[in-house]
Length: 403
Image 1 (cartoon, helix red, strand yellow):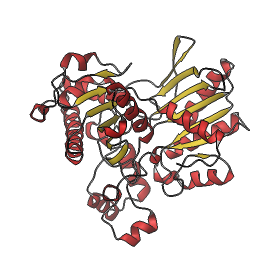
Image 2 (cartoon, helix red, strand yellow; image 1 turned 90 degrees about the vertical axis):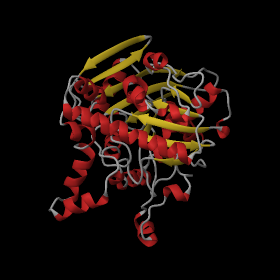
Image 3 (cartoon, helix red, strand yellow; image 1 turned 135 degrees about the horizontal axis):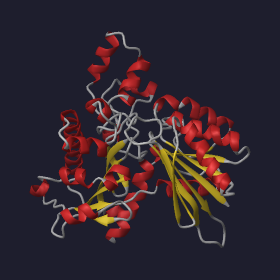
C-alpha cells in the first residue's frame, strides 16, 4: 500500500509517500517540500524532492497551497506513484473534531466549519484535500490534528480568564499546536537520552519558516504551550504577531477596521515582516541586521526576546528541565539564533557548546550542549509525516480509534 502524507504549513507544503504492508519493510518512495508558498520573501518559491537516492529541485510559482499540491501530484504521476490512501495534517479541529478522522461527507463539513479557527492553516489544508478529491477520486483521505497531542493539557494552562458561560459558548480555551512535531521529537529525544519519556521534563522549540511555538512537556504530556485558541498567540513568527494586548484589537475596531482586515494584519502582515518591512525570513533578517539594517536588527531583537521569555517561563513552570529541543526549519538550521538565545544562560547552569551548535545543521539529531551543562540542548529534526502515517494506519485498521 502507498500512503501519501501531506504536511501543510503556513508557507510550506511537505509530502512523503510511504510503502507499507504486512510482511514488508516500511519504506519512503519519495519525499519533498514546497517552500516559500504564498509568502513574501526574497527567495524564489521551489519544490525539492528526493527519490531513489537523488535530489531534485525546481523553482516554480507557488502562489497558493492548492497550486503546490497540484505540482506535487504532477511529480508523483511522472514517477508512476499512485497513492492508495492520503493523510493530511489539519492544524485545528477545535471542539468540532477532537480526534483524527477519515474524511467523509460528515467530517468534511466539520472541517469546513473549522476553517476560521486557523485562518492561514486550515483553509490551506482544506484546499489540498479538494485537490486530492479532484485528481485522485475514490482514494480514502484522513485528517490528523495538531491539537490532539495537547488535549490533556491541565485546566490551569488551558483556561482563559473569561466569563465561564462565554468561554463555554464559543469554545474559548487554549488548544495548542505543532502537536505532531511535539509528539515525534519528544519520543526521539527520550530515545537519544536513553530514558523513558514519562521520566523527562522537556521544552520543545518548534521554530518554523512560518509558525513557531514553545511547549513544556512533562511525563510525555503537554503542561503548557505558547500558542492558544488559535496559532496566532505566543512567539513572534514570520508574519504573525504572537502575543498582543487585546486592547490593540479593540482600538482597531473602534477605528473602523473590519474583522477580516484585522485578521489579515495580525496573521499575514505582522511578525518579522511587519517589524522589519523587509522580509518574513529570519535568516534574511539576521543577514540584513548584520549589514546594519536597523529595522531588521529590531525585528531580530524582538524575536529573540520573546523566545527567551517563554523559555524562562516554562523552565520555571517545569521546575527545571532535562532537555531543551530545537526543531523545524529555523530551529534546526539557525545556529546564530540558538547562540544568541543561550547567551547569558550560564547562571542557570545551561551551557551551549559553540562548536557543536555551529556544526548542527538539522540533518540528524545533534547534542549542542557542553558536557557540564545542567540541561541537555538538542537539535532534533522533526518528522510530522511519520506521525501522520501512524495515525492513518490506525484509522485504516480501526475507523473509530480511541484517542
